[in-house]
Length: 239
Image (tube, rainbow, N blue to C red; front, side, top):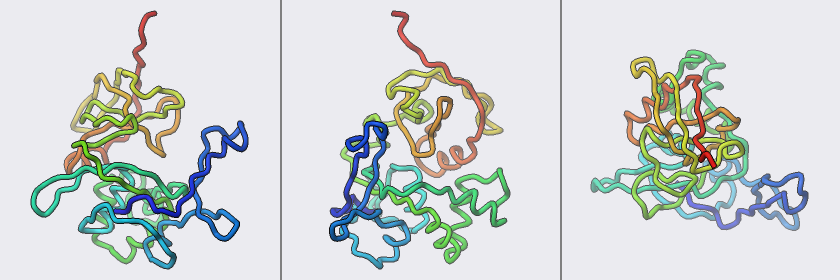
């Protein structure tokens, strides 16, 4: 798991054109030009200089890949201690979900696959796994966290079954939301007070949320099965 590379350049396009406010790109210098930063494949195959320091190590490439999708997590060290790592930045490339790609290729059942199933398949098929993972050019960089737990975009620890990732263009971070949604098949309805404490690259739209189940294999299993329509109400002061 890599920290931010020293040669990456962050460009705020809104400073060049007000119409592009909020748009950010990442690149690297090549002579007098700024070119797109390295893709996942270019970073992982080591064909280009990559001046970054390792933040931590994990046992399997698939674990690193899944952790990049999640954006933050907790690692259990060989001596039993746990450390938390969080999102530090990305390489600026567009995220490509490999679940849909695997379904199109007939590797998973269309529309019913879970994150756990994707993870298991990738680990059992390492050669194909590398090709599929490289199809997602987006690469996430991490940082070690002093705090315990999973830190969201609001920079506070997330609470299992109470924290929700939202699109901040519509829902301000820190908002309280009453959520009514159907959970996984054996969980019934999830009617709960939630706090908007995180964001995500795939979480776009006025009515789009990502329910935080927690950390560990059980949480990954539940999160992977979560795919439902629902309603939330944003609570605001009367005055």
